[in-house]
Image 1: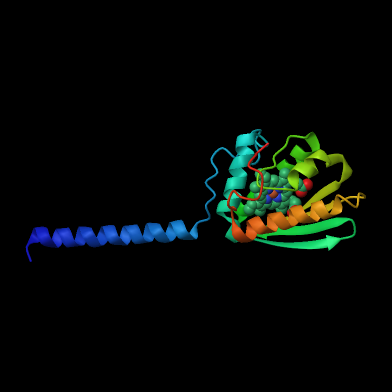
Image 2 (image 1 turned 90 degrees about the vertical axis):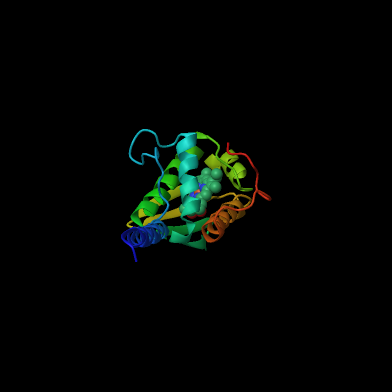
Length: 176
Ligand code: HEM
């Protein structure tokens, strides 16, 4: 075998092994490249940032686990991840969404229930408590018509966690 051929084979093998290693890393790393999300900075809560976080939650839905329990007057949910960056996304999303509901800044794409919840923001109570891996949320209401809506929304979120981003049929196509 001449020298050039040997060099060619070595280079070829090197390229293959580099490509393989890069593939492994990409697969094992959660897709959390949310540039500009700035969890702790002043950018949180803007439309672009909120959309960016939702996008990242969908991209990492298989790394999230969730339980939903019906309680008197509403629902209690636990949403967590073992990946710290995904935990941070979940916590940032809920904080920002609750702020939006409080301030009436609609964000209601892909959901039949969110438009109703935004319209009735002062008729249900929402609380969250951070856990080391995520968040516990309780939503309750005295209005018997609103209670099933709160529960249904939590089931919608569970659907996102289980199935990722849904097809565009069914829910509404509006973001706000
Ligand atoms: C994988 C995707 C998603 C995850 C993991 C997620 C997670 C959560 C969690 C944990 C809550 C707290 C309420 C509960 O636990 O039931 C929540 C609330 C909320 N989410 Fe999401 N969400 C996702 C997608 C979306 C999308 C697509 C939208 C709308 C564009 C959205 C908008 C909201 C809003 C407005 C609230 C506040 C409503 C409330 O709880 O009072 N989320 N989400």
